[in-house]
Image 1 (cartoon, protein in one colour):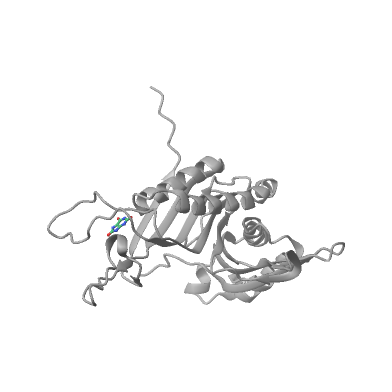
Image 2: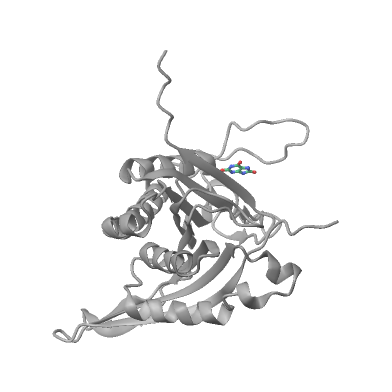
Length: 313
Ligand SMILES: O=c1[nH]c(=O)c2[nH]c(=O)[nH]c2[nH]1
């Protein structure tokens, strides 16, 4: 008659903050994140037969997250996500996969009287750092997905809002009887960056991830710098071309990453013709006052992977 085709459950929106206190210097460092844990495994009977004996309560998952945060570093978030995921698949024989998503929020150290303040921070924007981790013991779940043993990691950036007031063009695009958009050689370009970089699979699981842990912050810093520098410096022919250049450079900079994804809304700023008012010039090279648009917006996406090596004949 019916069968359970998909089943995952867990705790979402676990808010977590950890402070590191350097007793010698008095300098404190803070990390704040929001965690989602979803478990898969032999949990079908909890849905179909009201059998709660297979349920690791979502409250237990939340408590575990706090305990693991106390016992382990939570930075880099890729490592902490893997520690949490690994815990669930190694502690419970019937749990075969743990999906852990971390959103890390910004707390940037304040500069006061020209010096970094030892314990005060500010939120310098809505940008977040993202980690999506899947830890698997290799056993397929009764109602869920299957995948290789080990840990799969995806890292990224969300909510990084950028704008350039020139240095962007869009011309030469296909024209037909449906086309109204004029070509432009100078436009405003604004987007809210959503990017992801997919790490080579960690078949060695947590031990392998611990061994390369410093790479994750380096990769995040490189991806962020490449994104911002390319956005600023590229004489953009289109969102498509600029985002491809970003992907290409991240693949070059981080050898352990095998693909990079971007999803970029094109946040339009429309020129306003004010010539009806005393002949005011506000279009083309005279454009100064624009109308920012909320929607609709363009949405440009791509995934760029490494070229497969040529097959030998
Ligand atoms: O960079 C752009 N890419 C497009 O595909 C597109 N389409 C559009 O109307 N404006 C733009 N800009």
